[in-house]
Length: 175
Image (cartoon, rainbow, N blue to C red; front, side, top):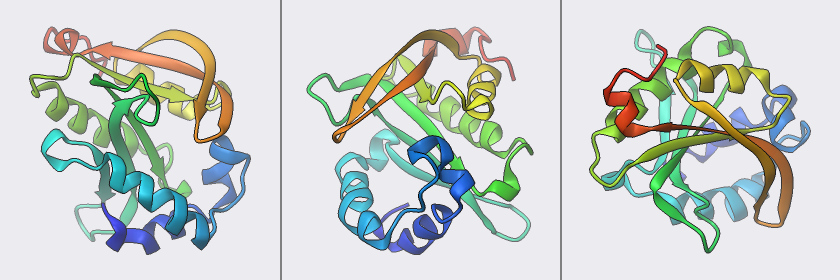
């Protein structure tokens, strides 16, 4: 996805339930899409490395479900880790609980695991976001820690899950 998809990004973020574990349920404004979200996406988007937002659509009618994020862990810090990719997801509420996020993330993880520079794939979530935590577990990720995540002036406690890409080759994923 890129700046041409800003309407889809905006529409997705208008559901307070979608935003509940991201910012407490506040819909994203157009200003925030234009001045924060899109510039950040441009900063980490690198299709050759698989970094960016991968759009999720239904096969039968091409309906937009949401996206899967891929970027180096700690991308917006001085401790950026290009060999440890962060994966995350955001889907429209009506598609929750149907396996779409897990299926999309698994397919993307398998593609990323083939890249020579990737050693680990990680994910973070609000400790109360059981839906995302369940997806991480289904992907074969293991809990490492709970810590305070800092990004762009925001601080929040998150759980951190990770999988070793070499372990994926040995069948570590639970799917």
